Length: 103
Image (cartoon, rainbow, N blue to C red; front, side, top):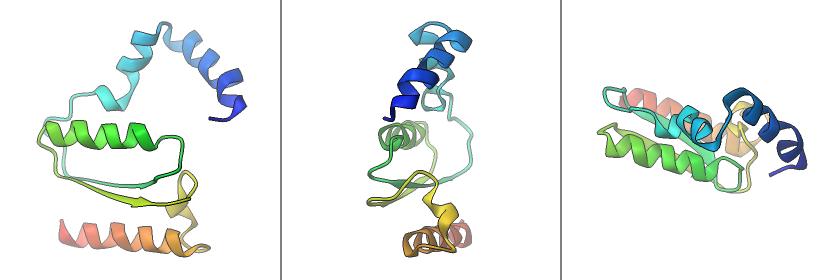
């Protein structure tokens, strides 16, 4: 986690949401997933939200949601947006397109 998250992000969340329990309740990882359509998730194994992404996928599956997760190594957050520039971005874009065709 970058120093900016510690210096700016966490104090901001504490100010807006208050206690830790409120911040947990605000996380999409802990919402009600019942009735959601299938989810396609692309994530880098080395990005800061990897653990939360995997938790979200597991909780959604536990609530009966069809979840497909594609995992890449050594990519930054939102790497699929770089599909015009890096092969991993193109691969993730193809992964999503194939998923859409299958669903």
